Length: 242
Length: 296
Image (cartoon, rainbow over all chains, first blue to last red; front, side):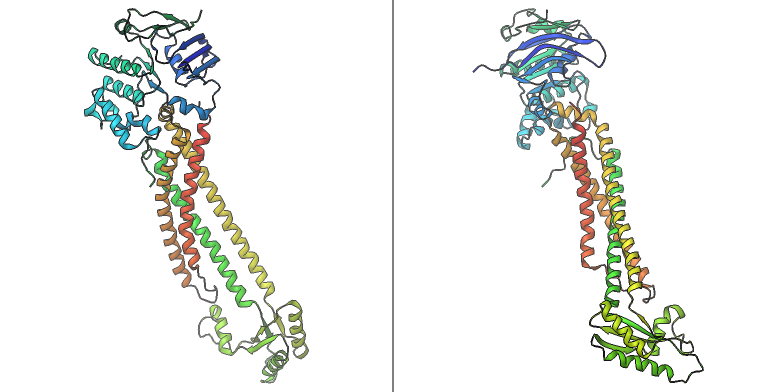
């Protein structure tokens, strides 16, 4: 039996209250295991599209499916189970300042009900991977922007979600850390996670050469990789908005 | 054992600071209400025990010019008439000392009432205090001492019952208002906290937290805060009762019957505190669930 696509958008539009459409008639299918950059100018709707995918917004029109479930019509009680399959790296990090770095990263595992020994093992390993093993007890306000970003990424991926949505995940880190973080996303992608990274960085897009989803004027277009990459999967965007 | 760890910055917010005080005041008032109910029940019960099955016969004093032993003769006739009645268990004339003791709260200790034209009193115990039986007593006494007054205490006691029932209803009303006020204030405080921590709750939702997960954290916070308040309110309430007890013991015994709160009350008081903490916790839990339903 074939797996349901990770993401399916059918004629999806979004507008906030009485404003104009931010997204217009989007059609998109992302197969599981796909890796895409989401690009476009500021204000094109990248963050709004991500909000639809991490269930912060419901579309004004159209239907969103995640892993084969119509989340547009899903009951409130069904959403937590779907959200646990989605890891989100917010542009503004949205770390909980009253918790330590360790506890921030541990949150998804605690919410999922893992035991404390399992949580300690997973979180410690991941914080070492992102280079924050010496900051486990530090609270976010004393971390630098780049360190916060790494905590946010660690929190998003710690429970190995099936879909990872990252909004400018390398915007605040130096090249070396950016490469390391991208390597983390690539490793998770190899393990089966679908990755969507919203970015303004042409350099990042060019360097890693994954397919691009470009938003402009509320419309979504699939563009080929700027350069082929051995880790990029085949064409997964089946339809694009006209 | 329930973990008190929380992902929300609960404890330092304004609600966490005032909930203990609020609950302490509510528990204090609750304990006073329950003790009030217990006292009124105790008073009613004491009075009821003391007057049920008894009547008092008053033999009015004759004018001073009458023969000296005429009053004694009238009392003796009444006693004779009473003792032959089948429903009379005993009939006894009160001594002058006993009458002086009854008047002591009003006239003071040692104030002899011998010079006052006081009626003779006969304390009658009945095996049957039905209305018919009391009518028989009245008829028998009236036949030998026509101006004798028979007091079966019913009218006096009915007024007391009305009064104590009124106080009892009032204390139940106070307890109900206190309970409602506690619930409403917890609802308000919880909603304020939800607004204060909207961003944190939003993040918890995005990582897959169920409403129950968030609600249980608020419930635990409220339980901890309410338990502190309960301890304070319970302590203050019991101290207040001890002080009231000491003050009441200084009142002349003739005015008040012996009031004993009883073991049931002392066991009920901690229960009132526990119920207040439980009510606060459940209210917070349900408030969070109901408020979060309006979010995506």
